[in-house]
Image 1 (cartoon, helix red, strand yellow):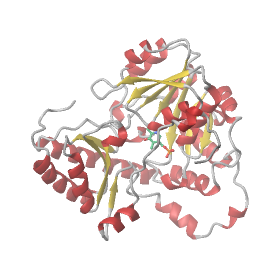
Image 2 (cartoon, helix red, strand yellow; image 1 turned 180 degrees about the vertical axis):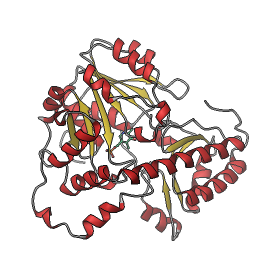
Image 3 (tube, protein in one colour; image 1 turned 60 degrees about the horizontal axis):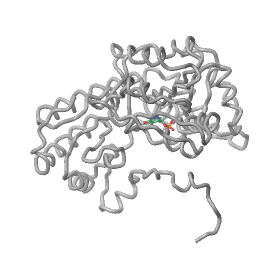
Image 4 (tube, protein in one colour; image 1 turned 60 degrees about the vertical axis):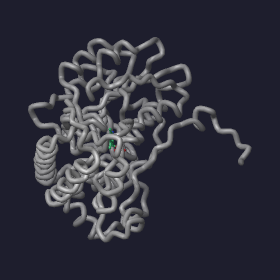
Length: 374
Ligand SMILES: *Cc1c(COP(=O)(O)O)cnc(C)c1O
């Protein structure tokens, strides 16, 4: 046991328990093929143009990357119609969430998060010695009124997510309006839109428009999900340019590597690829949910590329049998939803096989759960 003393709020941090890797599961269950439907990644992979580009070589990687991500910044600001200096890039959105907390929080402050939610918010706050106020979801949705009621004099940041992970529910324009109009502008609102591209047009609102009117709002987006480059680690935040510039001061200069920057630029150029993938994922989600419904399996209506399903007390057996057959899904135990699983949408033929197997397993293990969810 080392005698080195760790700050007490660091040693008590919750541990992120990652799902297994494909290789691990192959080895453990002696499988040739394993399908990962566990981490909401994009099963179509990156734009083929990225692969083409890197086939030509990576001769520039002896140089440090451009710390300001100029080319990417220019491209993104044009695409989103916002000024380049209102964007911050990071080694994944995870890191931007962390930078925001590092820049704002200390031991006297607190943050408010919906509960359950994405673990990074809590962890980034706790590592700064701040407190975390958890406001339970209401019918699988973020409860804006209760969140506002929980604000106290020490509240510094409120984290909201739309679509929410792990439920897939969204916030409406009315709810965001209500939040922005009823929260003092000395409290930062972080709106995490990691999955926003999967929300059907009719249910979407122009969140970027709010940045112009509210200088206490930061919107988070990522290249990890719809753009299919989770392994390269790149995400971005958008907010008031002065606020963004201040947060950027704590950033290490080269956290966004050069390969990620180029891949992100190419992804943004290949809109056709993204649009096609999104269409297929949404249609797969509809198909999947229809089959769940027909079989009387309770699930939460999702606006994202994953679905949260109530599987009941025998979830461990269901998960084990899925693994034996080469399907990795996320155990709700690690997401704050014990007795649930979260399934990411995959390619049509994989989804079909998965759905058949899952429904059979559900009937075997969990049929007595009949209540319908939202
Ligand atoms: C996946 C995800 C992110 C993105 O994380 P990266 O660090 O950019 O890969 C952010 N927020 C939520 C809620 C997510 O599920």
